Amino acid sequence: MEDETMVHGKIRGASWLAVGGLALGVLGTTPAEAILIDGFDAPQTQVANSAFPTEGGVTLDAGILGGESDWIAQYTSGPGSIVLTVDAGGNGLLEAQADAGTLGGVAAFWDGVDGTPFGAVGLGLGVDLTAGGADALAVTVVSNATEVLLGFNLFGTLGGISQGVIVVPGGIVSPTVLTLAFASLTAGADLTDIGGIEMDVNPGTLVSAGPNIAIDLVETVAVPEPAALLLLLPGTAAALRRRSA
Ligand SMILES: [Ca+2]
Ligand SMILES: [Ca+2]
Image 1 (spheres, protein in one colour):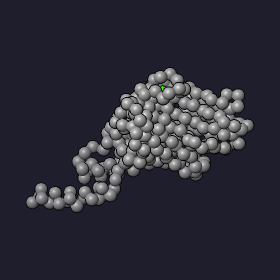
Image 2 (cartoon, protein in one colour; image 1 turned 30 degrees about the horizontal axis):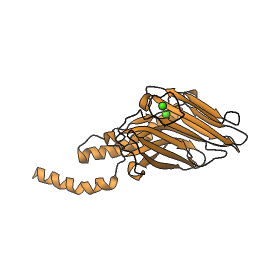
Image 3 (spheres, protein in one colour; image 1 turned 45 degrees about the horizontal axis):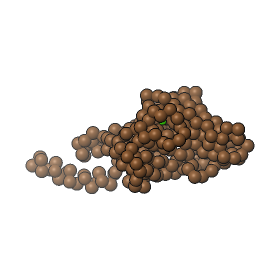
Image 4 (cartoon, protein in one colour; image 1 turned 45 degrees about the vertical axis):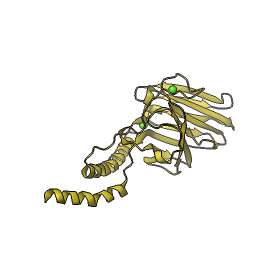
């Protein structure tokens, strides 16, 4: 996985550096820094099947937003298992899959240290998701066999839920960053004070023989807007001319 991580870093680093450098030159501000929600670097395994239809656990790790992630594998029907693994063999990935003919789902929660994935979502984060100028959630998918929906529920500390979905296309074989703009979320929660984050794999959709998805990290990012930068360029050029005159 070391090679993949390097490739991933190179791709992401290169693209953001290029645009960030342009923004730096034009706007004179430092590029926004993202919040890492989870890099999936602490091990977790949950297997749900007909004998154990709802399995869950928590992972405590200082590298996880809020210090803890909560996990549930939910089996619905079929001959096999719903398998959730995080950091298997130290690979730094979240992987979810259903055995052939088996239906179910997988969910992750980041809601502070509450010691359980069950019951109400904890509201222990108290995080400003817009910090650093972030305007989107981003998921880096390293591989995905068939189309998967990643449903996000953002729970406001003071109430309300904002929701959105990232469509992960099938056929992904190299690190791919997919974003969910805050502006596209349903209204409900104050994004500057989020108590809990939920990510569901294929929410409301039962999946058979899949999904076989591997995710490297979930974070917030400031998505560059090339169109806005282009609009700024003429004005900047004019300002520079005035300054030198
Ligand atoms: Ca928790
Ligand atoms: Ca990772």
